[in-house]
Length: 212
Image 1 (spheres, rainbow, N blue to C red):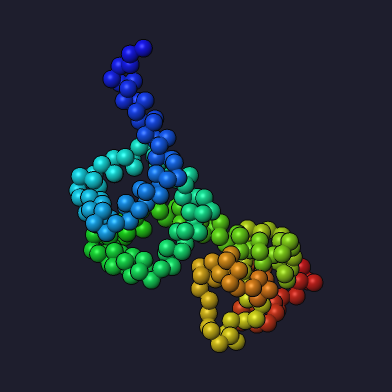
Image 2 (cartoon, rainbow, N blue to C red):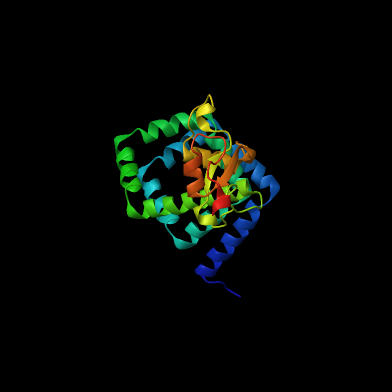
């Protein structure tokens, strides 16, 4: 049975794909790519405008975008990305890249967009709720008056901040530290807005709730 040119090409592609999966072929390929002259040539090719344009078009395809998103959320990928971001070389490169005028302008435009602000507010609200759940330890009510409206409960330092040597905490890093476990939840309690305002720098809320 004679095959057409299209069928012959397709069969050749399948055979080549299977051949490349063999361990000995993979090892030989790795050895070849590790050569200095080959890696330098590949690096120069990746920097060419034509390669970048083709790669951009390929990444923009819906199936490739979906595959990349699925790969980015895997535990292995997250661990690898976290290690890479903690590398000193990566930090220096990222700082230099962010300092470029065009990147600073792009970041400023993104940060002032309505969509970014809405998303930031949602993420912040979610983080605050998570921190409050950790501090509540199963008891979602005001530690002073027993108000059970969880939405209006606020995070309060059990030991007043002014008596601390490190000064006043900014709420955003504080919430992040509580979520990551860097700050113990036993340092904090949940108070309603009234009790939190009345307590201020005192060690206890001065309101007598027996009169309510």
